[in-house]
Amino acid sequence: MRIQSLGVIDDAVVELSPGFTAVTGETGAGKTMVVTSLGLLLGGRADAALVRIGAKSAVVEGRVAVGDGSPAAVRAEDAGAELDDGALLISRTVSAEGRSRAHLGGRGVPVGLLGELADDLVAVHGQTDQQGLLKPARQRQALDRYAGDAVAVPLAKYSAAYRRMRAVSAELDEITTRARERLQEADLLRFGLEEVSAAEPRAGEDVELAAEAERLGHAEALAAASAAAHAALAGDPADPEAVDAGTLVAGAQRALAAVQAHDPALAGLADRLTEVGILLGDVAQELAAYGDGIDADPLRLAAVEERRSVLTHLTRKYGREPAAGGGEAGDGSVSAVLAWADAGAARLAELDGDDERIDGLTAERDALRGELAELAEALTEARGEAAERFGAAVTDELTELAMPHARVTVDLRRTEVAADADGLEIDGRRVAYGPTGVDEAELLLAPHPGAPPRAIAKGASGGELSRVMLAVEVVFAGSDPVPTYLFDEVDAGVGGKAAVEVGRRLARLARGAQVVVVTHLPQVAAFADRQLLVEKTSDGAVTRSGVTVLDGEARVRELSRMLAGQEDSETARAHAEELLAAARAGAE
Image (cartoon, rainbow, N blue to C red; front, top):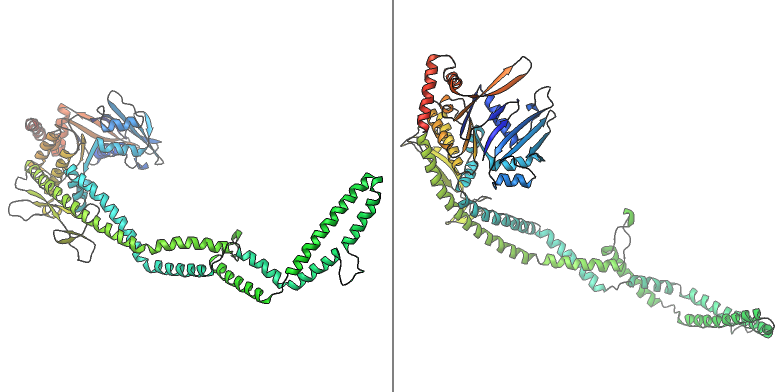
């Protein structure tokens, strides 16, 4: 799996060698042509400044050979892309407004998908990456990547336990921090529930008492009205001559009954008057019973009003609900009080269970802390073993890069914390921990025997630092499954014999992978299987970049320019030819 060609921003096409391709040219030209374009194909950020003035868009296209069943091929096919004779066609279009579109195997895809494929296609190593690797946090990440599954497996278990412990600790902190508030809430609920329980309200009791109070308050008027109505219907014993409704209706019924045989219509009316008489008699009896039942009892009225006062007190405290439409709260009801009591009892049970929850969460947190300590120790052990291998591998690379006496080691250390601070107990010490364990990693360099190991940013000169970082990159590349590596001027600050060794090392790396190097060193370019020259030309209005494959005499001329700044210098040409011959011999 490798990149076969790259159609870049300025309409040039870069054909890349299966092995080692060196990209040379004026300062910045090669980087703009190859690195920026490749970055766009790998899902990098689109910038409208990449579009030539006056143009509508910039287009970058790439052709990548992928093997059947490879992760990149499977992911691309899942997205609907089609392979072209075992190759994957990728394109990215950037408009003058800064918008971009991505296509994969002839199918439009989200730009983010290109970023996903990048991890399986290309590893980019450049000066920016070097600066990042000077930071201990990045060095620890790099060491974990180098260690592979030996660290990845326990780290996944540790991360899961760490996330659970943080969640448990957050919940425990929330309960304990708000303990006073929750206690006050529980006390208020308990008081209210006891008050409701003591009153023993019944659903609808407030409505019943209101009706009874109304009757008792108007007992005399109700008794007088019922007596007068009864007298009107059934007669008044105190006034025998008074005419009542019952007597009048009976007289009317008798009058009709006497002649109803002569007209059936009157017979029906007579029957109805009979019914009216019966109904009047029933009503009169009920009025008599009602009047007998009316009792203007001041004691009962006082008892009813007192009970209503108790219920009103409860409804105002626990049964008031906002009125419809957002107005002021209503007086509420006993039913609302009972509903509040049910909800309050459930909430109180939850609050009263805080002690049990705290005990349970504390026990789980302590168990997780112990588990984290064990997993952290396993991580440290795996990282320690990987650190030894990594340091030895980088040291071997430095020997190849003309630093035979230098030694690189990885310092793994822990930070102790106070006894009362949050930490893990490991080997009798309380140490700080985080989402990746308890280890801090830092690369140390001893440039020569007798020199104390120091952080690589402080223990190496500029040229030494470039070689150290290149050695680190090469070691990472050897452990990385990505088949194509792009090195962006990682040989900066290197010259002379060291530059030759850099070129030789990259050539050896290219035996098992595709290597693309943007360089300004002729010693490095001479070792490449193919050398590409990026040149900028201008007609006064538009500046273009062109890519030329250098062979034979053209390559000698470019190496001469890189060596002495003079393409036609006989001395420079002789040096270039000698350099090419030495590179061919050294690479064999």
